[in-house]
Image (cartoon, rainbow, N blue to C red):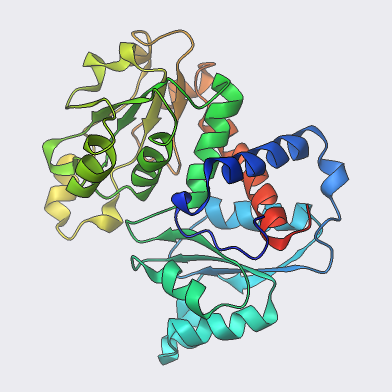
Amino acid sequence: MLKDRHLIDPSDFSLEELNEVFTLAEKIIKNPKEFSHICDNKILATLFYEPSTRTRFSFESAMMKLGGSVLGFSEPNSTSASKGETLADTITMVSIYSDIIAMRHPKEGSARVASLYSNSPVINAGDGGHQHPTQTLTDLLTIKELKGDLKNKVIGICGDLKYGRTVHSLIKAMSRYEGNEFVLISPKELRIPEYIREEILVKNNIKFKEVEKLEDVIDEVDILYMTRIQKERFFNEEEYIRLKDSYVLDMEKMDKAKNDMIVMHPLPRVNEISVEVDKDSRAKYFAQAEYGMYVRMALICKLLGVA
């Protein structure tokens, strides 16, 4: 039973509970009208202390399509946080006004803190470079819908593997399903953190390899997960400029890939996927964004206990 639960880390839910969410998302995809009033008189609060377009719009669209209402902010300087109000006090107040909360915050661990002070379910919409669980649910539903299941896949992840919270969450999540392997493609400076490598991959005997050239391994992968080099995670602008164009997926590289490979990206992209790739049938990042809305609809329903 997921009613009144928080989602801070993808591992907060068992595989059976994740499947509950995916099964409901699939029902919503097939018959959205059936769910168009299921959240009447329910309020979602979106607290975005960090810029976001897709994630915030996805949450707000999801709630509206379920018949609910939305309140919140996308600019913390316009809130009492600018006056020094603590996160704990903000969450305590907002949970009085709303039935469920989606929060993005630049500080790692902030979502866990929020869950301790909220009387409503809290959904972590990204906390610094730490976790982004609803993006992970989006990714898993996309893979499940497009590749049939979540097992025995070779997943190539390319770009910023050090700071990319979507990457960390995806590796943790897909490692829970049997037979999956990872090809980790990045500059040496942006390799996955040691705790992901040792605590998730090595400890659980997950097959993986780390390489620096995308073109050397693109023919091996079933799923290619591209990520942008995130300027906001760098303290040194010179290092960002040096690394930002490390990987660009173009049709020359796509020609070497499997015919049934899919390309995913959490978006927004900068220049790491050439626009010419958009026309390729294997490019699934915009479909992925749509799946994100449906999986958030399902998650909201489950946490509110209305479906």
